[in-house]
Image (cartoon, rainbow, N blue to C red):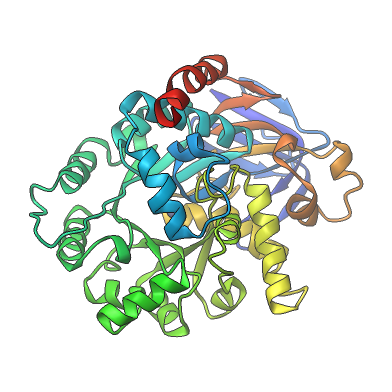
Length: 431
Ligand SMILES: [Zn+2]
């Protein structure tokens, strides 16, 4: 199936930050085959007239927990530790496979309508999550969030490690890379050196990337320094967790020395401004990180601490939070914010996506710039960050397939998802 987008404004997110007007983009199979100002010779199976619309890379939510959509709006008004221990963990203890599928499908429906074409997810029940992702059509890096609270365990037989190994064997690079498996340590404060040694070794041997939570709260940072005499980033470096490319979610309290570690090892920081603000964790010094050469991507951290899946909101919050904490309206450029939400996320996932260029994955979204909230348009990038919302997404194309168009889902049965959440998942978890 070939699709031609015609007469469209293209925000390429390439190195030159090209924006093309009245341009053409041809998609052949799963990839972008042509981008330019002249109509390509080749005939397409379908032509989408993009007059009045902006075509850009789909968003990459580089850190999320899809299933936690079931806990949307639950337990507000608490810090991370209270929220986790007193509210989230007890609800999660009631999860089963069917509830996980329902919550994941709900999250995917929301994500797709918000223009997300790829996610990096950390959770458990990963086979169920993968099943829903595959059906939806978007791409995902999946990490089994491994926690361990005792030294008395054998990683070779410990359930979460066994699952990690099985996931890598069964799913890594499934369907031409739609699914990638990442190795994972949930966090320094929820695990120990025995696990770190095993996981680092496993990732190296299997060639997997790493996904962790890092330096999210001040308390976590201080407790780690008290325990190990160094920061979580330094501890993880010592145990080899950065030996393969990694995603480190949050890094709110990371230090300048930590940033040198990130740069040495190709660690991408994932900034989650909504979650960090809601849980009162703090404001990650993203502008300084970028200036010092650290790679930064953007994430939602899931709908239980956010409480939606809109990357438009994340972009706006990232920009505003940086401006207000630095008292500098120029602290983050619009290009830098858009890159965090697209190209940098894709790069962190190990994918050639997040950019409109020949050979990249055809993960593309169309945004209706005739909407009142996007009129007038003095600056496309500024409108995308400060004025646009998820309701302006009129098409989502993942891996060359249109999966959402004008409010209609083409891969998901939204009524069935609603029913399953209301009749099964919510009563199961909250009653
Ligand atoms: Zn998280």
